[in-house]
Image (tube, rainbow, N blue to C red):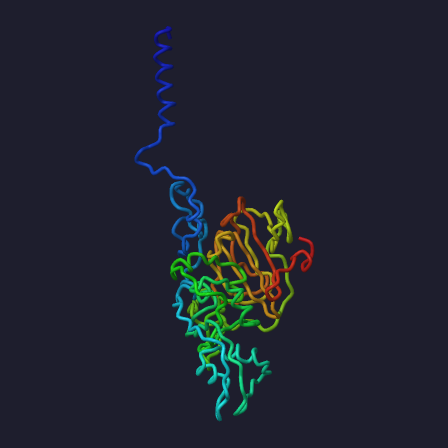
Length: 369
């Protein structure tokens, strides 16, 4: 090749190289938008796990997660209208035939709040002529199928604050007709804005995910098979007692430990276990599935199992969910497959154990992994 030919060839290569650096005007150029991580829950399964994601497509919170067909969770199936009644503090003289619930209905306050304000012991017997102090505040009347999460979303208040304000205790089941005290002042934002500001977490699901029961209703029995899908607005019977010991859900290398970590000292509520992609995730003990979905963005594919005696286990970053809410599971049963969904940067399993609302260190509860 002579000098002239080499010059022409080099010029041609230069044009090709520069062409790759010129943005395509037909392709939208965009950076990270924090709203991408706040998109509402959408049923998983739209894109195969191993399919490449379009880098210009907004990131879904269920990205990389496939799940069995299931109805939306109860807090989406039965949204709440923020129609709480605000009443002032007052007193009430009990009439013949009154019950504490009747006093609540007449005054607009919650019977539970009245009992606390007057230090009434169970079974909350009141007598004619007795003067009761009626605590003021905002009271939401619970309707059929409503959940604590949906109530908290409607008012833009953390569910944990509502739990504390109403002195709710395990199993945190609401009853139809109950008046729940909503803490805080009336906000100026719209219902949609309040719902968008609410960020779901594990404690919300554990304590506020079950739908309210009518006065004479009982929770339904768990399903033995994922093929029998229970309604999202049906409360599920939870185990009363732990019937098996606990075991590790996977065996691998622990890459993040329970407790404060990193420069910020932020507490990590579980452990992260590095495992190969698609590793079976096993139920740590007998129990009932309280949640299977991807509504907590950081954890991606997520399963929560209740075991009785206040114990709950949590399994995150799954690529496939193999169980349904309301399904009974046995220790060692495969409930999901590992993945790198959520904020995981490699295939791993987020695993945590809770006693009541308190996260506990799995490494102190289980033998060496």
